[in-house]
Length: 72
Image (cartoon, rainbow, N blue to C red; front, side, top):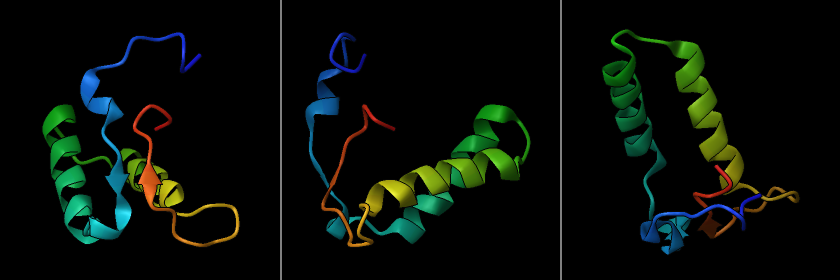
């Protein structure tokens, strides 16, 4: 299904999670979700954060170096 869909060109950019400050991203995600929904929603926020954190870890618990926006 991922291959059959047309994705924006920016989705081909590889993200190196070693260079990402997750704490800063968490603050931005919370603000953006509140802005989009018009109210605070801890369930949606925690879901988004868990997707990001799960993508940062592989099955062995080691930190992955690449994040695929198509799979999120």
